[in-house]
Length: 198
Image 1 (cartoon, helix red, strand yellow):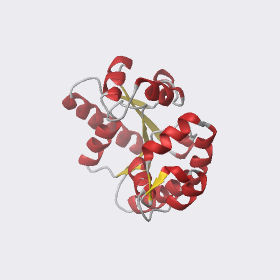
Image 2 (cartoon, helix red, strand yellow; image 1 turned 30 degrees about the vertical axis):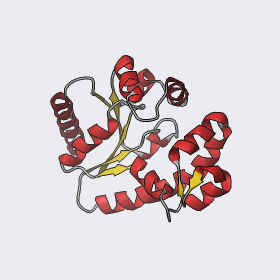
Image 3 (cartoon, rainbow, N blue to C red; image 1 turned 90 degrees about the horizontal axis):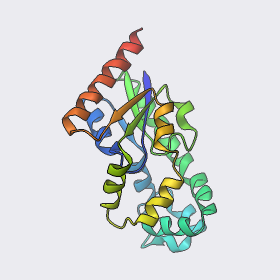
């Protein structure tokens, strides 16, 4: 089985692209969705994060917006949060891959901070989802609760898009129509399968 890492900076269209892989029968592990589960009431991430940042836990679950605000004022907190959350996510990824291996030739790990957390070494190939900076900014600022300051802070913590593209095995452009992006996804799947048979 070939394990592909799917990544891209904020508002590049990665979630939409991940859905396209899933719609074509490729199992996709959504790291962000798992983080949501870990942060929900009863989730494995709640108690350790409450110890780190009590004010971020509201009604028994982690408030991601409050957590993001705390990280913005204390960037050192991010490393502590990652030390708690990343091992929990990795354990879920390992279980997903073990299961996927039984019934597929390709599996996708959707990891927003693939390069930033040095996870590229854990996958066979890297797919980067990309769009122009102006479109990225427009999409990001349309999100609820997003401000120009918050976006600049997030971007400052992410590897620049041009560098991600340089390190990618495949780049999927999402500045085009959804139909064109879907065709690009199909081409990438075909290329991966051809590589696997080579």
